[in-house]
Image 1 (cartoon, helix red, strand yellow):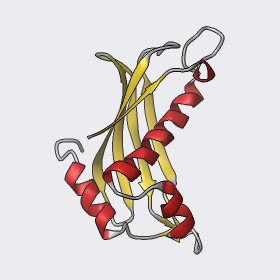
Image 2: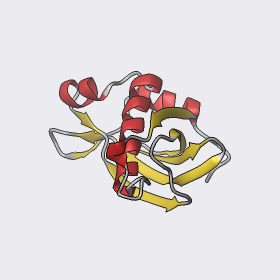
Image 3: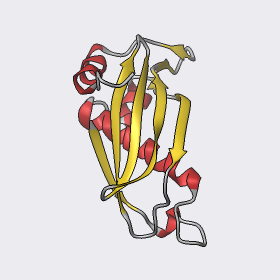
Image 4: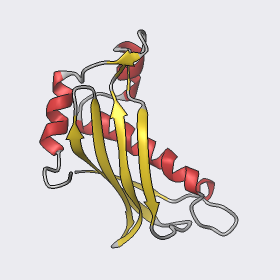
Length: 138
């Protein structure tokens, strides 16, 4: 499991001081970007601009469990659960302390940016995904 930590800032919240729901998706994308850099050894700059490999999200499911507030420290947990030739379904959970705020799953696809079509994961990325995969989640 990869854990990305961030603080809920003023830019993340609405007038009530709770996270405005689209900001969760921005935080999720930031966590995925750090996940690739830290666990897979591929930062998005080199992956996208030099290797010309994209990682679009093609499916996203979530449940908003409880609100997070301005100033909360949030931990975003990412765990691969199903790895295909060019796709990876991962589970995510946003938590503050022991309180789940948001949970769900998403599917990323490895994409050849020049040809605009899916491509197999690089061997090192796939191996890192497999290393961190949760075999108990379907």
